[in-house]
Length: 154
Image 1: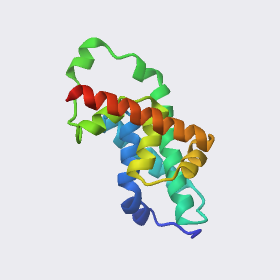
Image 2: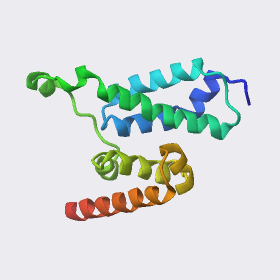
Image 3: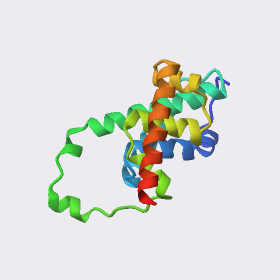
């Protein structure tokens, strides 16, 4: 599968890439869209992929890296209070996603990849470049925090 078609890849993976970006950007739709555009621009520049799984994994890792890069930019850290008041808060899909967004980055990513994208612990470990046992720790801690927060809401 060395040859790639941006239209097919966009149709297949846009939702996944957008959701990853949405998680990293703490629910900001505009930033998530910007990050998605950058991911697919990088995709067009990439030479090709060995398989569909390689392509999907590359998109996940690239989406994470693009978002991390965007979050490090200086302009994101210096927003005046008056500007922040004017920003519209977007509706979240449901209470669970809202709580997932509040988790620490690694727990949030592990939970998303496992429950929303169906990746196994070993696959997530390869994507996050950590041990499989670490992924299971992220999942355990994330589920524990989610359970506690959701019980508090009830």
